[in-house]
Image 1 (cartoon, rainbow, N blue to C red):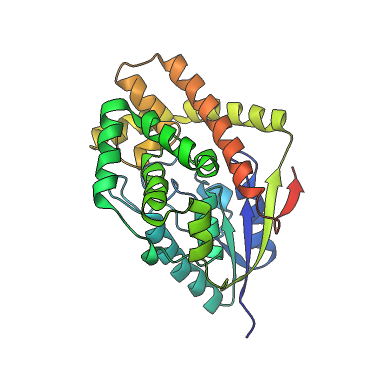
Image 2 (cartoon, one colour):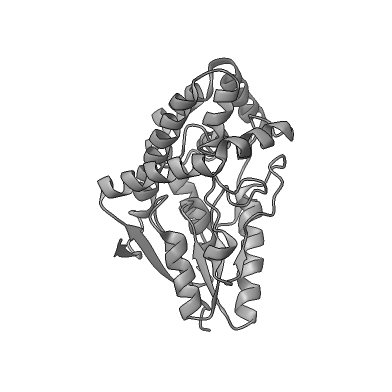
Length: 290
């Protein structure tokens, strides 16, 4: 039986994924499925670089702007909902064009990873959460660096939820995250063509810095202020997003606005490096020089 065909567009932040995906969708009668861990949240438009209505060019977009930032929404939740969405697009004889820089989300869909099979250790998880509260997220991240450097390289230190999950996998299975993921993979259900956006590092970093400045000009500071006024916890997954965490720290008086913006640029560049590290492991990606 032939597997249904889908297309994926991946790459680091600010590399032009959205534009490329929309052009593919226009050309091949497709619809875009976002695979971004932060574009799922409502009220977080500027800092997550959601495409505007104009940029969407009347191409339907899915998996964007549908989760309240005060709610928890796991990778398993995303994969379940995205598969329903992809299959609906296929049933309507259109081409699903997956687009995003969150490698875990893309891989989990393509490789049909079954999260229901993951073992949990609530006691150990609670211990790690307490460690983060007492000594900060970096203390927990240091444990991951020591026990599974490869996983640590692909996870942002701010993303405490994923850092703890990676450590929990080691504790419950005795395997690294990569080993556990390989074991959890099933036969891919889709025939995927994967395009990767790449550009010279200096050019990419310039684009990242410029985009952060543009986000600030468009009102990112007010966007973060509104989230805090809504009661979105600083410890929530949504507020760990780059741009939001740093500006929340500015509002809390931990740094100046200039320092916060510099930190956003620096963390965005580091994130781009981690994204490329993740995607370069996939030999099936067709790289497009931008």
